Length: 600
Image (cartoon, rainbow, N blue to C red):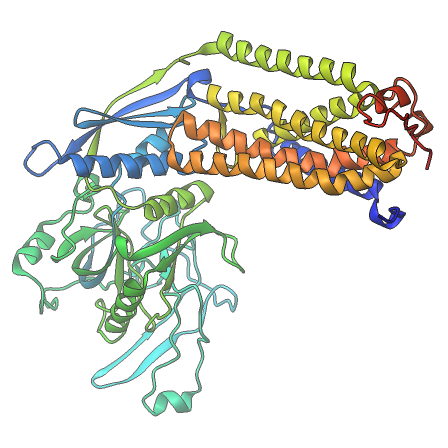
């Protein structure tokens, strides 16, 4: 085999890559001011809440329905399997335990059904403005960047309407105001929720095309107002409205918060009377043409060209077709039936005007979202709606089940194991033991920073099973450098190679063994992670994480560092304390000849 040249080994560059990785993790910690890992339920305590199912006839819910609710709630609070949250049945109730004290926002989310409906508006009426809302707004000023041009609709017999988007203004409460409340000066809050397609076609067409009866190119983004119904009069169009629903609509008083229907289990196959989330408008809504189960995925993020958070929706194939039909029907209808209401848990969160059919199976919900609220809504829609409505029962703060003593005991056990490995490496490998010690030290730094960063970005919380998984990683890392060290010795004894040559040749063979061993460990961790829940899944995650870290350490530190040591005379000439001396190299040589390490 040809002697390796410098082109085959650039240890300095490799070590710089490792340094950049450690600095990136450390920089993330400093930027986020996160210096300690988050602890799980058994080490830091948390909050426990009992959910009581509500059924139509107050009968116990079916077992399969309750199991489905448990599965959905578990996905919501512990969708990644690393937050150490626990969800369990207790009779007909569901008990949820979430690490950390003061988790009221998360606990509130798990009790909502998160059932989304898309319904066409049949009638709308502005209610009396709540006392905390302004009744006037400043006159908007035109702006090319914030206020798109009007999009006229033409070519429809007996109908000529125009939808314009005024410049957003801010009300004292940050809520959107209906044009009926701010007449004669229309204004909408920039924070008002809206629905749009994720891809917007051009908004302008030539006047000649519009005069020929063609519709203006549809824009996915609505008018910027969650609802712009005119003040209703006795001449409301009741065509197609169920009389019973109309009577309910006339009696509905949305000014009272208790009448807004939060958490109502509305029947998607029937018409429905509902309120705007702030109580400013009430609606008669048609049957739901698109429902939450038609949503394929939901994600939160900041759209390109925007500074506000939004929720992106992708519909399944059937849902995409129904969404296109619904927006087409609304586009071809007279106001207020040209609006589509987005109903979440019985409350209208937005009801935008539709300026054109929206094909493609994608939509976007924008509005008064921050990162937390947008992510929460996306998670609710992504993991599915609860099959039952729940009332919250007892909410208590619980102390840690293991406490500081058990945490310290686990850390001491890990430290003892680490010290034993270091002592063994130094006694058996002598100088090479320095590489083993430094490899473990680097692995510890990367593991700690990774755990801290994951804790503050993915809600990874350390529990006792996680700590056990991290302690096991000591053996995984030790196994990797032992394989490499022994391979180097074999090459020097059997191939009569110099240390520098043996380092390169041994690496080619040792890395295959290391990768296969780590692959088997990682596959086992992945299978265990997806098949288990709770603490077992946490153990699997920690084991998989440390297996990946072992590969990083061996490739980016152990191998290049040994390549640097091979250039030192202390190791190249086989000093008695190097672990590569002639006596040690000849112990297992079958011919009885002594092979002295050669200096490259």
